[in-house]
Amino acid sequence: MTSRWIRYIVAAILAISGATKLVDPGNTLIFIKSAGIIPLAAILPLLSLVTALELQLAVLIAANIHIRHTSIAVLLLFGAFFLISLAALVMDMRVDCGCFGPLSFADVGWPMVVRNGVFLLVCIYMIIKIQSFKKQ
Image (cartoon, rainbow, N blue to C red):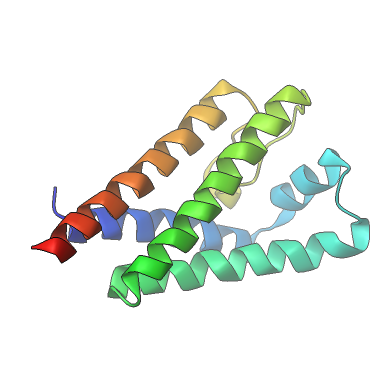
């Protein structure tokens, strides 16, 4: 699989996640609030920031703009999502994460952790492919 198609897959994941949260942030707000570690006044600004970041990174990845830096930013974001899903599992949270808005209902559990782990691995693979392409 070429690095271009991997970039498009990652961009689609980010765009769908960001766009659905933009349209219906309800479940994500509930998820963040139920964790109980973010002050209430910071939840909406944090969600807005994450949503904007997902959408911006989707455009940058798809357009191949500043690809090395953008790839690292996506890696950090997916890494954070993976760690958050693990923490939510340990905390025994029983709510929908809201990761893909109304398109998907994913209660915290191993399937969500595995999904986020796969997204993280795809991002790592994308970075490896980009690095090997740049060396040619």
